[in-house]
Every structure is written in C-alpha cells, then in structure tokens.
Length: 348
Image: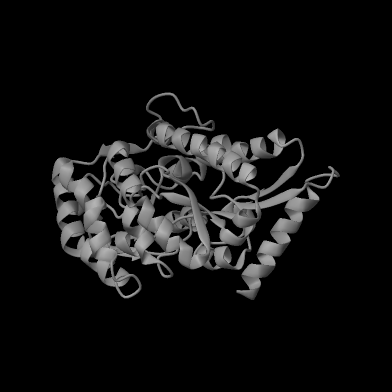
C-alpha cells in the first residue's frame, strides 16, 4: 500500500507540474481514468474532463491520469476511493471483486451478446451498485462499457471447445471459472504483459477488447480472433469520493453530472462501432480507422451452439459461485440479482 501511495503521489505531482503556470483554481479535481490509448478514453472521457476545466474559465482545475499513466493495477481502487487518493475514479468491477464482489454482477460472461441487452442489465442493477459503493464512501456518477473481451489466439479457434487445454489470459474470477469448465487454464496477467506472453508461448490466448488488443499490437503475436465475450464487456463505473463530492457546490455537482451523463450516453452509443473498428484493424477486413498497419487475423463469429454451452456454464457454475462469494458480504446479493438482472435476462 505504501508503494502504491508513493506512485499516486508522484503521478499527481507530475500532473500538477505539467499544468503550467495558470492561475490557481478554486476547485481541483484529481481524476483517475481507465487505460488510455482507446477511443473511449482518448476521444470521450479525457476531452469531457478537459471541457469541464475549459468551461469553468480556470475556476476548476482537473488533474487527469489514466490507469496506465498512474502505474496502478486497479485492484485496490475501492480502498483508494475510500481514502480519497483520487476525487473521482474509473473502476473496473472485475478488478475489485475481492473487496466488493456484488459489483461484478453486471459483467458476468454470457449474460449479453449485444449492447442493448447489456445496458438493460446495467441500468436495472445500477441502484444496487450505488448502494454498495456507499461502503467505500463512493458516489456513483456514471457506468459504461468497453468492447466485448473477445479471444485472441496464436492457434486456430473455431469454437468454444477449441480452448480446452490452452492457457488463456483473463481478468476476473467469472472468466477464470468459465475456462476451468471448458478444460482450459486461466492465467492472470495485466494487459501490458500479454504481448510477450503470447510471443514466448507462455499463454496460448488472451482475452481483451478489439481496440485495446489492436492498439497494443496483439495481432502481431496472435493470428486467430474469436468473437466470444469470455471476459464480458469490461464495464467500468465512475465514482466520486463522498467527502470531495459533498464539498462541491450544488452548481458544480449538477454541471459535472450533466457532462458525465452526455459522455455516458455517447460511450454506450459508440461501443458497437468501436468494437467493429478494432476487428477491422486486427483482421485487415474493411477500413482501419484506428491508424497503424492492419493485421491479418482470421476472424470467427461465436455460434449459437457455443452460446448454449456458455449459458449452461454460467447458470450452473458462474452465477452460483458468484452468489456464494457475494452473500457473506451482502446477504441480499442473490435476491437483488434475481430481481434485477435475472428479470432482464428472462425477458430477452
């Protein structure tokens, strides 16, 4: 924890030093974004915070760092939130499952294969997430997805059964449990470690979004792209520290919430197109709008048969195991899931 605190302090000091000699602001907001080098961050989230600073006429200063710029892995994000290390944080529920497993409910694998269903799931469960974040002095402000965390392999993969016997990088217990049921081995690596792991054969496959994988050049060391959301959609929540939030004026709170709502809606709307951009660039099929040299990966769509296999695993293993991990901390966990996400899934 001390090392992580020193990293945060140094990173924020760098942000302050690069802010120039502008007049001191009335309000300073320390923001932790998610991983940069992705359209969601570079084109929407960071510019949104820059617009807050610009529209205030210098009255508000925003010190914005992405997760990779900060040097943090994200697994201690809720603890940092409670301590006020950042004022507003972008948190991946899968990363903090050890501290609050209830948050992972919106991003279990196999719950949704389209963004319309995913948003219904997320909106239904949002009040429960807001309630659980109060334990960490958190105020939920927004919630949105990245791309489906599909499978990149250096050997052919045409169906879910082809993963048997392979070592696959995933993030989060639900994806690891899914792999175990498929006869594969889950490997816990950060996104930045996967390129070399694939290159050296330490893993056979990795799960990540199409744009992140392309931007970090996984297509150079993997040749088969399977459109199977093994890691679901890597949804994130943006949460304010309550102590910081309560000190803001009502006007500033409403302005920030309004800006974030516009950004949130835009992020949900752009998600399908961003996923297709990453696929086009990784495979070389279609125009690559992300820049760089397109790959030549072989793309395989997920089949209805594979969806049925995953549904069985999710219903018989993943959801029961998740409820078992969640209930000791949150006794109403299973009931809340059934009343919200469960009803959405049943209606689809």
